[in-house]
Image (cartoon, rainbow, N blue to C red; front, side, top):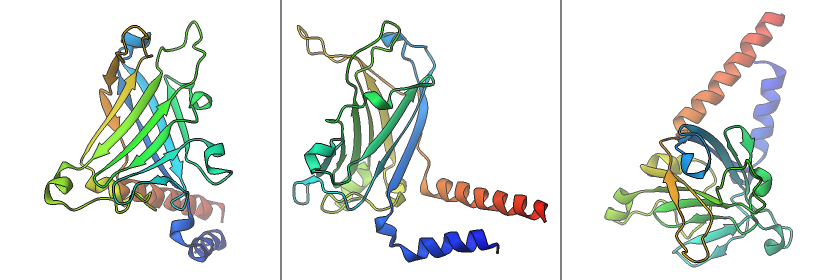
Length: 211
């Protein structure tokens, strides 16, 4: 084992797992012709959270974490990114966007602040929703007391998921036009572990070639 790999393992062992930020990534395609995009527009995004960050809790029911540093007086808040057809929308994610955890579901919502450029997609909101009707049916919560999870093991228990992109509010008619993703990929914990293992193996092979 190389000294570099040993150092990485040593650093990982020194810090508690729950102290490390958790990042969930997702990507897919959607027909965004309704909003001025392509019929097969591509999107990609992620959200990172610190399991110890403060959230507005409601006992065992749910918790809400806003993307607003001022609300938590400088404490850690979620961090999110989103791109559509290669255009980065991350800087437009509004501070009132939120990450919610319920007993049987997990909900990420990005609201986007104006202005919309003349060629910008007319998308005001996107949300990723993952839930477990099977767990709810048997009364076995996926999440307890609304705490944010400290790893991605919960993904295998949320067997349903959807990603929705919505247009702007219409003042006379508060109908929010929306479309669901045609395809959606959220890596399972096993896939993520396989990718990490493959990366380590590639580093070791490259290191062997230099000797």
